[in-house]
Image (cartoon, rainbow, N blue to C red; front, side):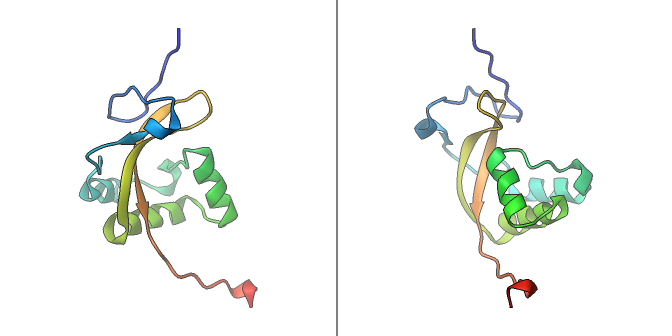
Length: 112
């Protein structure tokens, strides 16, 4: 028997087939709700959840405070792409997530 753990308010089940992970009718979490939540937590409460997110933060040398700022920018000025089931590790758990894209210019002093 396979047990699927869901770590979000939305019920599944998520689909094991990667092509079936999109959840229609998003965004699932309204931007105002996300912003309110971010305003009431500290960077100690923020966890990069998927392996890809953790890797991306390491590559860009960002911490939890930076991640909170990026989420704020994404939900206010970014473009909503889709909602999808995201898996934390190969055997779960799963969460229903919103995906956004955003563009931000960065100046990297050491690059010059």
